[in-house]
Length: 355
Ligand code: NAI
Ligand code: MG
Image 1: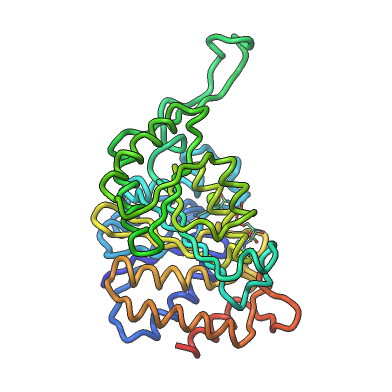
Image 2 (image 1 turned 90 degrees about the vertical axis):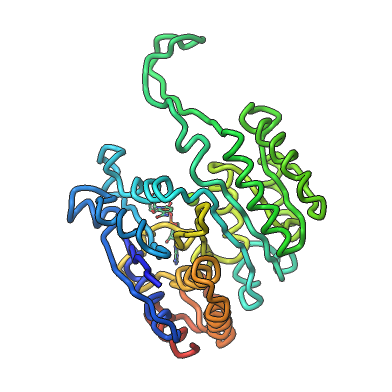
């Protein structure tokens, strides 16, 4: 099993180090190779996604990714910014299906910003389309407004677009995932205002005809944002476009207590994938042994399950994390009265001991 390890920037190196220690506890033979990505790669090679890093990721059975980005690169031209590395990996590897489970662990019910009864037992899955939508649509740019009330004024524009095959394949992924869960899909759109998302709604409805055993519900994104904090347990699988999914999945993260708990998988049509925590490089806490490594460790579990066909090893990792939480250890982001605060490394130690 060839794994490309791309730690990246900020807390990326700290959390990936702990995930690698957990991997070493499994009785599996991994062949790992580490490469620079993001700001780290820009410093070393002048580009956030060097050819060699991309090749390593393409040739691997799976990619374990930390995070990229730092405010100090904000002044760079867009193509050289660290965030282009993750966008480039998604595009080049065809990683169109992003799985973001939001699970509220029993021990963390009180770490959520919502009332415990609203989140106790929460287990929902957000499936975000990852290679289309306004994040990639062309044309985009800056110009003089060609028309309208502000004709001639400087303006900026992006393009929201989705093709039928792009919507069909993510809809299939969502319905198939729902079959393994509670057989309900909520498709989130803005069909009342946007042509792109009226089309999205139409195509998802068509694909649904092949999955009569799964319930399909449509919801506008503004209402979905409300329902996620009002009654999140009503959802099972949410499927949506790239931008709405970006926002809603961060919102869902907070239901579970901390974004530091949330793993993610990004898969292509061949089922190969990139696994990363749902959060970014957290420059505010980088290098301070404060970051929660559990989202990255749980991403390893997703990697074992989705790309490496090692479900038992995945279960072992998830049980170890639950065991550590049950023992009362918490990083600062999930700490509450009566629990023991530990740093990144000590949390890694505890997971290793549990494994
Ligand atoms: P962020 O997710 O890095 O941080 C948001 C907040 O959550 C911060 O207060 C941070 O301290 C906290 N946080 C995040 N992960 C944590 C963890 N494991 N343990 C404890 N606390 C944690 O998002 P932000 O601040 O908007 O962006 C920071 C940088 O990360 C930016 O350069 C951004 O572009 C980049 N970014 C990269 C992503 C990626 O590599 N996939 C995804 C999102 C943002
Ligand atoms: Mg985001």
